[in-house]
Every structure is written in structure tokens, then in C-alpha cells.
Amino acid sequence: MLKETLIYEKMPDSTVKCGICPWNCVLKPNKIGNCRTRKNIDGTLYSMIYGKISSMAVDPVEKKPLYHFYPGSMIFSISSIGCNFHCKHCQNASISQVNFDEHSLQDFTPEQIVSLTKRKGCNLIAYTYNEPLIWLEFIIDTAKLAHQEGIKNVLVTNGYITLEALEVLAPYVDAANVDIKAFTDEFYQKIVGVPSLKPVLNSLKFMKEKDIFLECTNLLIPTLNDSMKEIEQLTTWILKNLGSFTPLHFSAFRPMYKLKNIPSTPLETILAACKKAKEIGLHHVFAGNVYAAEFEHTFCPKCGALLIERHGYRIKRKNLTFENHCMKCDVKINILGDVKENSQGFLWF
Image 1: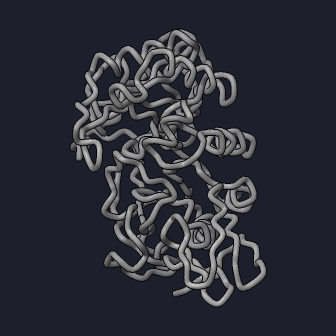
Image 2 (image 1 turned 135 degrees about the vertical axis):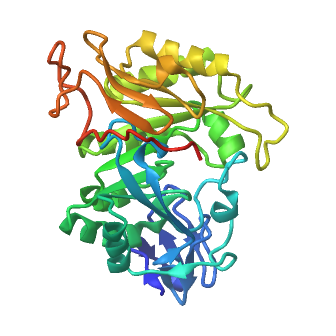
């Protein structure tokens, strides 16, 4: 179904200006926005993907990745199509870099999504795989119903949204993993295709103010964003603006999409980035999509005790109370929700 865009401005000659993300697309009749999902029809801006689902799955919440938000839980994950970024290394280009009419989609109502979430035995919904922020209207309607049923809402996002739109969305979002692609405007311009990193950082600070539980991811691409100087700048910003207890995940790049000529990230680079972030003052730093035991588990920031042991998606609680305090020194740990042990674990997939 068509859904009128929640935040936009009508202009002369049936032109419209979208207010969802910092592109602020100005569209004449019959034109579509940069995200490829919004269209001006006779002077009214519509979302063309309301209730349009490209994929759904039940995932470990750690796959998002979220390591400190209801650890060990399963999360019902849904996606649509489109994105307001055009990353040359996109791993989901088949759904993110297509127009609204170029992909086979299924129609669902918010009520159906919440019902499916409950039937799958999940208490969490993730809006993920493609960029969820361009799906604003459907997420808000679904997230409202989810909250009424005691279900938490999670964004896996690039963070590229206007503060006006985020103000409307924030009351219904419980957690987010924000992918900070790099810490230079040059990377965002050449690799991502947007003018500046600044709107992402502004969104992160705004989410922090709104008490949305935050974790961040940084995918390290050899020669493009993996210098120790840039990693230090990124980590220092997180420390100053989001706090020392904010989990940060460094992930390894694999050649894909339009960056197949760049080699995979060496394990040594991931380990060096993790160590640098810890040196600067972040307490919870993780190595994503590679095996690095030193940066796979959660440790107490005060006494160093092992609190959550991870092996893939297998979770084991150690030295952690059910109120998420360290058993050895009683310091409160920045973990939201119950920690569920998964004795049989999950396979990497």
C-alpha cells in the first residue's frame, strides 16, 4: 500500500521536499528520492515500501551485532528494500541498491509482524539488512504495537536521519547498532556516496540523549579506513560523546560488490584496532566476524573478571549476577536485559 511520507514539505508546482534523511530530496512529480523508495505522486510524497518485506529471519541478537542488549536472546529480523547510502562494499546490495519496483516483496501489516514475532517466541524485533530509517512510517506503526505487547525494537542502521525524523521515531526504539563507516568525510564521499559523516555523529548523540541503548560497528577496509590515526579519532569520539561503556565492534572486510579488488582485512589489523580502543578508554571492545578470544568475551571493567563467555553465538554467564553486576567486585555492568545462556549454541551463518 501507499503511505504518505510522515515528514516532508509541499512546495510550488507540486514539488515536494523530503525530511526523513539529510539528503532532503527535492522531487518534482513522478520523481523518486535518493533512497529509491519515496515518490512524488501529484504533489504528495509517498513511501512505496510501507509493509513491503524482502526478508525475515530469526537470528541471535549477537548477529546484529548487539552483545550487551538481552544477550543470548533470539530476535525476529525483517527488512524491506532501498538505502540512502550507496556503499561500494555493500553486502546486501541485492535489496539495498534497487528501486522499489525491482524486487519481489511480500505485504505484511504491523499487526502481522508483531503476531509473527510472538509466534516465533521472540521478544525482540530488528529492522535490519537494508537501511531501516527509510522505512520510517512502517517501523513506527509496528514498533508502537510491539511495545504494547512487551516486545523491544532494534535498529541496525547507518544513522543517516534528520533529527526531526529521529525525534518522532525515538520513543519506540529500545536499542540500535549504528554502523560508523569511517571517521573521515572523504570516505563517506568516495565510498558511501554522501557528503559528510556529521549527520551520523549527530544522530548518535541524539540517540544517547534519548536513552536508546547503543552499540557501534566499524568495518575496517584495508587502505581506506584502517589507519591507527583514524581508529584513534573514532574511538576518542565515542569515548567523549557516548561514554566508555559503549560497546564497539571492529569487523573484517571481505571483497564484495564494487570493492572486489581490495583484499580482506588481516586479523592483525582487527586486533590492533581493538587494543587501541581499549588503550584509549573503551571498556567493551569486540572483534567481529573473526575469531579472537581476547575480544570475544565481556570482562568486568573494574576487576577484569570474565562475565560473559562467547563461542560463536553460544553464550555462558560467568561471575555475573542476574541484576548484571559483577559477582567479584559488584560493579554495575552496561548490559540491558537478562543474559540467556545457550548451552548448545548456534552456528556462524
